[in-house]
Length: 477
Ligand code: 4AD
Ligand code: MG
Image (cartoon, rainbow, N blue to C red; front, side, top):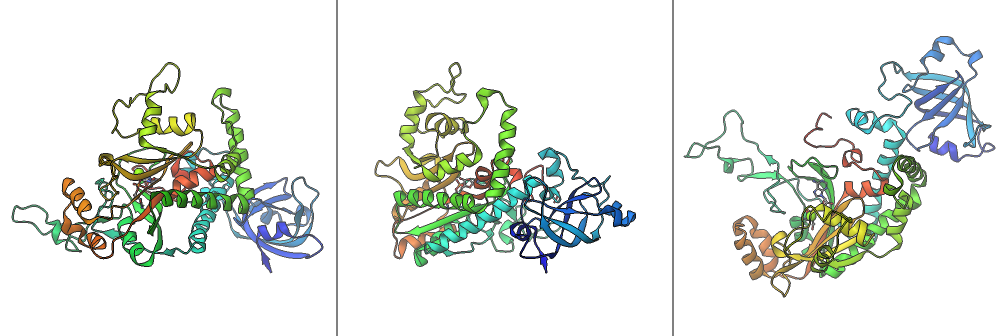
């Protein structure tokens, strides 16, 4: 039987003798010790080669990166930090790897370098750990919703609607680029597009999810989302994955409870199920922290930060309270904020958000009841006539992790909002129908999956938590 390394490391040596395993050589030391990894676990299995009885040509082919098939006896290990090892009786090189040319050398590589080798970077411990955690978090997300009575819904990728109204859309066109149909004025007639209207890649599945919430009750989407924002930051991608639950008969308080419960569940899931990967990343970060001046070092380790979120309530603060806090504080003794919040109604800049979560509250914060004019058209207007039932969840070290709201369920108010923002009713006739036929209070939110993976892995650049990041600079793969 062929085993995975993860299986083998769990075996005791009495239970089986001859084993077979396939994987990639991480290192080959002293012509004797192969550290073999097959991706099933962070850990390598040590395979001990009796070099005297081996063919020299074969030995030379055992190089870092080579794929090998090993047969041998599982025995107790004398080495430190491992309980078992394999005494190799037969080794076959399945795929050679030129040690001079192989980009992933057995040494520390910079993340920038590894990004250029994104196709090979999961051969490293750090990236394999991150991607196993990403997979585990996705599973936990589906598990949570499944256990809580939600239906998984697939929302369209190509759509005619601009849910966020932010205008950051990638056009999708089926027009013949060389010979496009023209309007009478001689301009390209996008209305002649494949769908008979201008289409784009979705920026959010929310509006479609609302339609299903208003029939199936509790639904969620978890799919790719696209934003043509040319911002080159460590927290933005042009293609990212978003989790969007939408629930009928749930108000904003219920929405906050759901988001908090959900995030705690999925983080707890990886604490329980991915201890090795988390400990590895935890140690990696501790080493990194040691290179910083004392004052800049983080008080908590990665695992402590995750546990803190799982065990403590998020702080819930209204936008108005947050503005008061910001007005009355000086983030560091000498400097005030670069962007002063002079007036109620201004949008928060990331430095304000960071101050609130990292300095003032020092925990995840749910900000709610934002000014209507800085939020999307679909959010429910409060009785004060100037704020909406919006919520953003801000995380230390990450910033905005979640954006959500209670939706405007009143047809007349929604129409007024749309008119004020010049949104054509004809474009969203189906969305308005929900308010005509059996309208009800409903709410939902969107969680940026990569930002969650960043938090759970401690990675500081969003490009390093998605297999092939799409940013203005990275589209090679
Ligand atoms: O705040 P946003 O724009 O909210 C919506 O799209 C709503 N329609 C969601 C809903 O209510 N169903 O985006 C939601 C989250 C953000 O909080 C952030 O975590 C993430 O998506 N996000 C991005 N992540 C990576 N790269 C980008 N360019 C992102 N833009 C938003
Ligand atoms: Mg937002």
